[in-house]
Image (cartoon, rainbow, N blue to C red; front, side, top):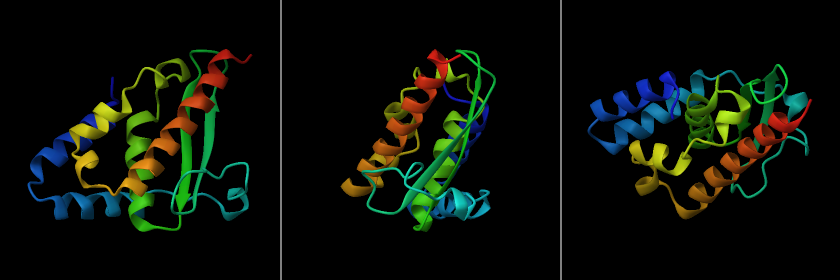
Length: 143
């Protein structure tokens, strides 16, 4: 259950044979992504468990299980900023109830990310996914 944007990304990754090209593409995605206002880079939006500094600010439109999930994110590391952009492609636009149904490990595995991220980066991605799922779950049961 991936978004159309993520499906497009998976197709792009299929086209890019070399991991170096994929890595550059992830970094370029991070550069192209709108950043998070520094005023929102506070402890409440900080993601613990990442080697780099990471902030995720959820943006939920509507109420209850059909509310639409989106977020902005920021990191002090370019590759992590790119990984935030990848997660944005995976989750943005889904209903908050559908966010929890996404098998992030399998979807990110389609991109080959599992094989090319350090253990610390993989732990950071897991921490970001857990934060996203938690916020979406809370929103699905609220209101």
